[in-house]
Image 1: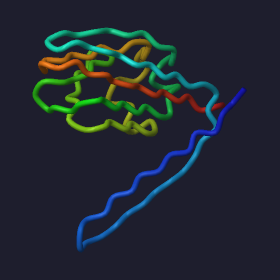
Image 2: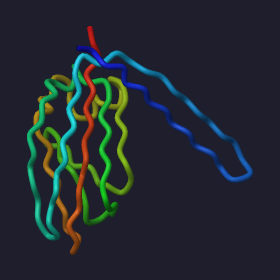
Image 3: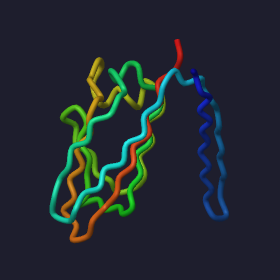
Image 4: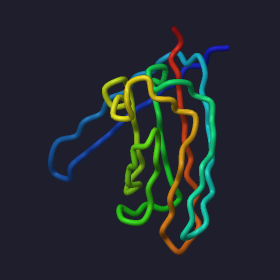
Length: 126
């Protein structure tokens, strides 16, 4: 059964501009996967998503962030996990390659402490 996915982004600069956008889409399916990675280790976790062309939203969060020592790899593309990562729409998701299979994520943790990375994938209903 389809589910409604609501999303919003707010950004405000102290003493400067503020912007807010929000929208929603009807999701045919969604997947949530949690990857727990010990310090100085890597882990690969499968999930159900399909191809990148079928994905509308991908949100990746972590219990820690570090530009130099924490990353994820999707379809051979490595991305530093220095902040939460939100990929919304075909324009952002295309960085992982048109037609790319997004059925697993690899998290590389060069930190001393264990991290937990959570991935939410939403696929729009056709």
